[in-house]
Image 1: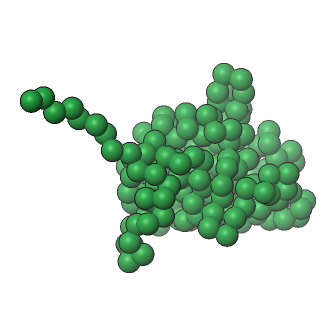
Image 2 (image 1 turned 60 degrees about the vertical axis):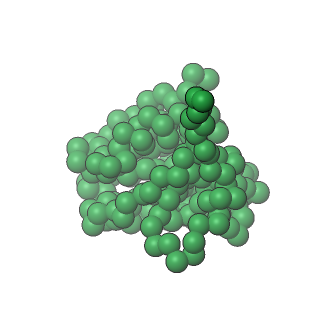
Length: 184
């Protein structure tokens, strides 16, 4: 008798029922449970600086909310992510819940690491576009660059590629300027 291999997909409910004693961070990507390694010191330094600069701008203009990982972003029953930093505009505030974000934030920021870079550049890029994340930043600590991607009819388009000595500008957040020398 031939046995068919049927991939078993996890759901958001399965994800919610992981043991509370579990100390690892996970994401649910297309029904696959993926462990997210702890970030490096440099990764955390970059995340802290970007969070402070972004949060200060957003707060000063009363534009919405900025948060950092770990925080569940439930995009679908089979897709739960924890971007390093995210922004939810006042217009989309309804997606903010006590247990996390239920829907697509306006901005996701992922800081690449050797173990996540491939997934962040491919699977997550497609996933975020499919669910309507309006802007996606890929921060590369190795090359000290940030790519700003803007969602359009054909998916993400490069809105800007920034490196040390340059100043990042966001199409989504008019007036935001981030000198990369402060980030790296």
